[in-house]
Image (cartoon, rainbow, N blue to C red):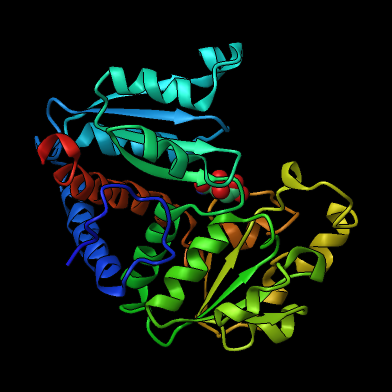
Length: 311
Ligand code: NCD
């Protein structure tokens, strides 16, 4: 039923039953976490290494917490202080990690495909925690779990993904997952920030918030990723907010019970207004963070049972 792959590198290509099974398992971890129990001894004696070549607060902490709740020894490799900065290549790093008999390797890297390359070179199960503009699979899983818990399903829902889609690995993973589970996806943003060939995936593209938000059950906002932009793709932050930023006025274009999401970190006043982000009824942003830990526990659980050392 679940994917036989011992790595989690991308959502693209995963089958709907594999995704649903992961969400079901994550659901049981939500209940366990809420009950205050410290978890199980599932990963006792296993080593999880967080290898983050890009900054992260919530994703790294979330994996750390998930690993610890399952009893793993968790090591956070601070890349800034590691030999990577002394010129070591990614593959030399892989060889070093291999020699340490690490079981689970959580990788974030600025280059698309870096976790897949590492996966070919290490014995450990590799989990992609975000690679360039490619994918961020656990983010899409936690988003799906958040939506499913609130709406009871994903099938038939209209999910609007808005803003800087071009640079967003979160958007790419979400598009694959939502389409696989039967949601309809609206992408909304200026033409400069929407990938040109994306409509072939089966999404509908809008260059206007009013048209794109019509009928939306979920409004997912994305951060304007300035660090990945090479040219002047957007005017000023103020101008961006005027056309593409989510405030109460634009949210009114969506369904009256539409819910708001954002993967974080948020640029308040750029892609989202504070009153919408902090709305206790409409905003799911805090819940997304809580679901992140449960989803990562489910992923670590499933992959560790398939790890090479267990074969
Ligand atoms: C996202 C990422 O790193 O891709 N953040 C996250 O994991 N919560 C989105 C972003 O950086 O904007």
